[in-house]
Amino acid sequence: MYRKTIALSFAIFIGCAAVSCSGIIDNYFEKKAVENYVSPYQGVWLGTFSGDAEGTLKVQVYKAGNVEVTMISDASTETFLGSVLDNGAFLNTASQNTGFTIYGNLAGRNKQSMGTWKQNTSSGTWKLVKQ
Image 1 (cartoon, rainbow, N blue to C red):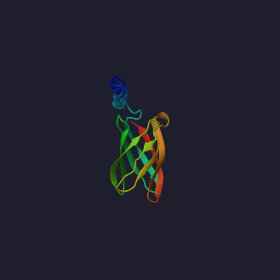
Image 2 (cartoon, rainbow, N blue to C red):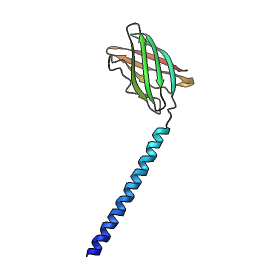
Image 3 (cartoon, one colour):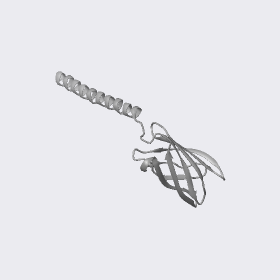
Image 4 (cartoon, rainbow, N blue to C red):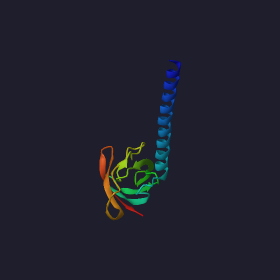
């Protein structure tokens, strides 16, 4: 009985160790994939927005897909953060201060992209060109 208990405990320990090692290895390779990722939209995108308001936009896409949006209009200048997905779609690109939000994606033709923007009851379109 004692030997069976020890053998069973050892088998469970070995099984758990194998699963833990597998998890550690999976986490390692997942972390490496994130570190090596380069957004296909990385770079500086410049353009304009128009509609109920007008101005210029600068979108800096960083290696990991994080974006920094600078919006300049007659009324204000502000910078806010967001991200861009692999398909070029903007994610969470809204100013916390004014609510200015850009929608759409960067996957346009010839490094030119278009989309829409909204701020409270105002809205319009934007165009960007990769520099």
